[in-house]
Length: 151
Image 1 (cartoon, rainbow, N blue to C red):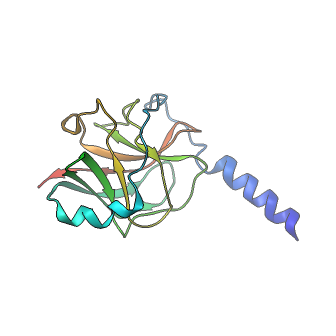
Image 2 (image 1 turned 90 degrees about the vertical axis):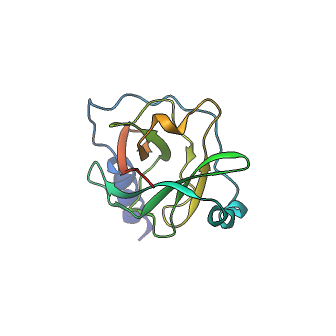
């Protein structure tokens, strides 16, 4: 019984984000780590400056909200408690401006569901971006994106 499940899992992992598109460039990761889980509660203490709603890309289901806020340590990206991704082998949180922008990966997606906070890496200016991406680095395709609206 375990063997068919392993085959199904392998097929899913290989096809999970195997769609390719020439409009997206290969990512160059930026050394940044997701903010600590304890910081999730702190997000409510700071004014949100932009917000968006995720839509899926590359035949993936990506839903929920995303927000941009600033605290004492810098700019943060918050995936809301309603965030959900249907799965992929290598999902990362990144930024875009009409398309994914290489070099903006903020970290590996901590969970396929729920609230998460990611700090902007040093050298990134949030004003240069108007989208948050869930990016499959392994297959170089978008899994979903949220267009940000200034508040």
